[in-house]
Length: 458
Ligand SMILES: CC(=O)N[C@H]1[C@@H](OP(=O)(O)OP(=O)(O)OC[C@H]2O[C@@H](n3ccc(=O)[nH]c3=O)[C@H](O)[C@@H]2O)O[C@H](CO)[C@@H](O)[C@@H]1O
Ligand SMILES: C=C(OP(=O)(O)O)C(=O)O
Picture 1 (cartoon, rainbow, N blue to C red):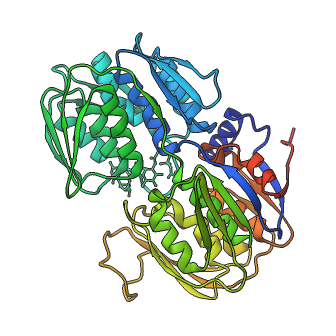
Picture 2: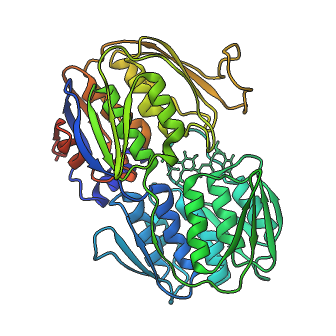
């Protein structure tokens, strides 16, 4: 069994799925209403932020996803009392934080990238931190050099271990001037969570400014932090000695919302995403409209639908916020297989995020991936050496196939493709999807999808 299979089965089990293989009977538009709750990319970080307080925190809008279970396990291993008795609400009590055994931390590390964000809070609470090797989506190399450089700049000592890292800060953390080589989401959060209780002021240049980061800053401010977001991606953090607990409702999951929107388009359906908001989706909505999708912003969500007739090809370039989010491209590519002409999707954030297109090609799509991008196409200045481009020629009818989920968003795109395709597809490893899509099987059923969970082989 590969580590991907194990990740998938563990993720499935964490949210009560008995098997991680589905049989999908496609060819039927998805129609109806589903709700999205708090963002995976905020909730997990907000849980870590609770570690910084000297009193309990309450987080609302928490989705039932396996990454939340991973972080809950890690917090509990460090002595945080986590009460999850009320659905969607976590009470996090950090008043008895303790060092955890490395084996225990490793057992909880799972498929998430969040353990690296425990560095700052544990250094403040305990003076040292053991961090296991990270999981997360396998979408190319995902180094942590920006994180470690920032921690060193703040005064931490980092020792590499066989299966993780050990950090100490004998003299505590001290404010510093840090400039990130790229506006990394994780590294920005690392600096926020570490500098907020450091001695003195930290100036972070080239910071990420994703909506989930703004929500994390709001949480830290509620806890007593002083953080200013200045023009041109500069964030200034004035360290404070103590932070208290917070009460916060997490920002909605814009990546889940965009995924269901793409599902409506790819299947010729009509989906209302309750809880979705316009502001954080503006860039996505522009592309959706250009492709030919319709949407209506409602008071409590957004309705997305395919109006009938041909879809138009587009050029998309993934980028940091406020650009087109890299996590949106995989579901949108499925819809683009049904557009009338040639679409080009440039991926500029990760170095290998088109692996999922192999399965779409097996299902009848025509997608050619250019591993070094395409230089000649009219577009903004190429930003990074690692970029690739996918050229999607449509429309191509999709047919059923047996495919294996490679990662979270790629997996969701396979689900959508199978739902749009004629015939019955088998999709294995769907447990990975539970990392970031709450109750996705229930939501599929609500939208009229026909599928069966395939019993695990004995
Ligand atoms: C849990 C979470 O919030 N995940 C999100 C987060 O991932 P994550 O925080 O891991 O993504 P980053 O923004 O850090 O990564 C962006 C780029 O920077 C590179 N990099 C990053 C850190 C580092 O130390 N060195 C380095 O080279 C990465 O390899 C990648 O090429 O932001 C991504 C970009 O919006 C999203 O796709 C993920 O859904
Ligand atoms: C890449 C993703 O997540 P993570 O950083 O948690 O692997 C994602 O949400 O698509």
